Image: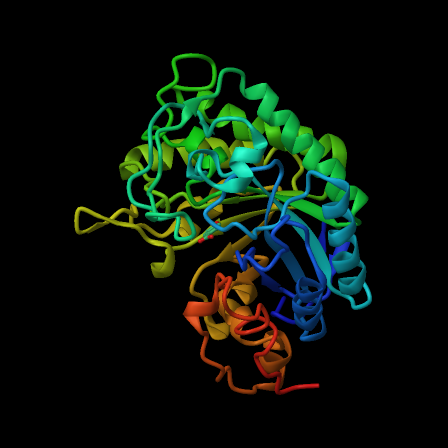
Length: 376
Ligand code: PHB
């Protein structure tokens, strides 16, 4: 019977245990969006702390005006070199690391310096803005804007191909396509943000096309080491459809993705921290995503993330419900999370929410690399 501490074959590699780290936006790259030394220290701490499998923070495949100005990118040589140093450090342990490829779609802001430098509009499947949002670092803290409709989605698909080529050059073990949380791929999937009347919108098959085509391109670059993250229940970034439509959409997308030979599919469960409250109501379509879609995943390893305790993770893995669990916030506060779980030691560092996303006026290590480890 598998437990959290049994190895798992994942694509072309083997991960030493079933305790992974999900992508976490930490916003500590250089202002040029280049990965740096402090990021290396952060990832290495967690690899040394027993993490079997790390998914990098969302990594931008092209220059964008993100809500987090120091989110890293992977579109130029300096960024590739910065990531390579991090990947090499992680590979000095048994830990494997994927790069999460990210395009924000309508969650960009045209006034952000990076977006201005990019010289292109904020693109999305349709000219529909998300509600809510706040670009804290921009004067007046504006919210989301109405995006420009993407004329030819294949040009965006090529950006993901290049992102994967660059991730390979940096030495990553694989790539995870960020198809969750209201960003570009999710915006195509969801009928509230995609009103296109061409082959990229309308039917479930058409809305799924963009994400599936990107996965095929990533496979051309990375073979068996390609995965996708989805958050079918929506919420974050004003995303979500009625339950029946959600089930229909994701049953199709997941069953098609399952035929591609991916290394894993990860579904995000409800995470209160990422819910959006709009007009006083939770934006999430509340249902149990793991049991809803478990039967659809037949050929691919299945991961889950979102508010797991170690005991629940053990239960899910030993029952075969999931192959691994990706923890998020517990890894922020415990650089040695997996070692603590294995040693039965307490998870007693409190996550400092204020420093999750960093702050230009405070040293980057605060709430980042300064959480104490108990184990050695
Ligand atoms: C965030 O920056 O808050 C964020 C980014 C990516 C996610 C979720 C949250 O998938």
